[in-house]
Image (cartoon, rainbow, N blue to C red; front, side, top):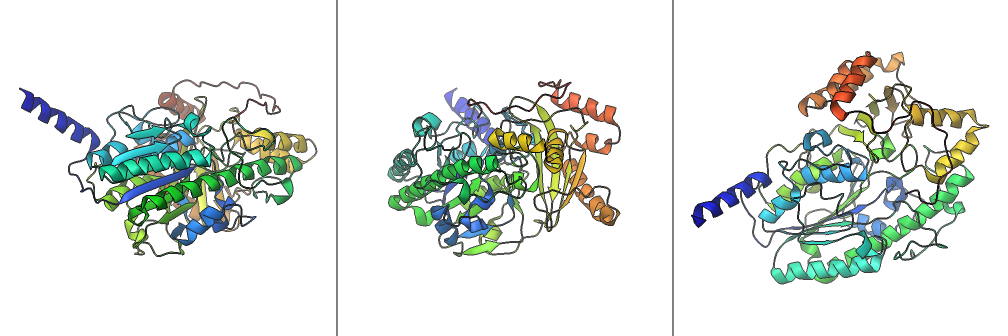
Length: 498
């Protein structure tokens, strides 16, 4: 009786993971390093100033391929990482916010483990493991890593995991997640317990304010501390790369660096504007990727990581992934079907459902906000001193007051010319000269929603009927968990704010 039971267990495991073959112990290693809430244009490799803010990442960029049209599909930590783990859009895995994916959805960890890989993770363990059945072989979380902000601890734990892989003669999938530059930003006068000082600190005079924010003293002061956190992220990345080099396995390791979403300030993280989802994407793979190269043409996104990792490693995986392997691009080859990228928001921290859907190409971005009814007051936990400075300035600056109103209430549809307006300041909805292009972008979004069985498709098709849209939202997300019948007062940030 033992033999049939054993084979049944093996069959169930392979069915759930979708794996049906294994690779040898000489498979290519994968190291995925993620930053937490990093603005892509903070990196010198993406034109950031000061150019030496991220020296380790700048050097790494010269060693491999730099994607200039890379995006996350959800600009929030947990659902973004669920897309990485499952290779599916949020509504296809069930992880439509800070919630688990369905257990019947295959994941990258179980799949690669079935292929002979060891799976290790540092930091963001819960957010990066949307299923209970995702059991990493090696895992240390924020509290073990100096609040996720200590480069030396990342180095030591990386060395330990890499030595284990070498001793066991197994390839690895290693996901290293910095908690920088996530709030609270680095204040050198009051370091978070366990956190290290960055190798350099910055002042308000060093700040280049992103174009989607007003240039105010309070904004500069907060962004200077963000830069401190960004420098410490770079320190951490450098130490992890040092551990990889010392392991002797760097030549057989594909290393990718991304951010899980844009910077945690208004008009970026937790939205679908251009700078919400744009991520740096630096890739090094010795002997395969030509050093110091850039791809300025093709859109890639994190939903593509799972199929790419499978093709790179040779491990057979599941059917039904939403992304497409971009291995041809890594080899310097051409690949069709990379003219558009699709991004979304469903539920954010606190359980507040604020669905957004967006499609971008090289020139335009179209956004549909089904939650926008001019009553729902949008808020998130990424506003901080920047929003406080904007609120103060809005008392005498009508333009800033209007920006805040857009942030709080939105409009159902937005359309931007990213070539001339990457900061998404001028909504072109209703402009006759763009009607044809708008229709094309709307058509692309509808096609995508149909292909992925997006529950917001019916909302879009009925967008002129507010009552119908409200019912669709209720059916999809349930009753609102955060009610805002009256406009709450904007308040000053508290010390306890994340």
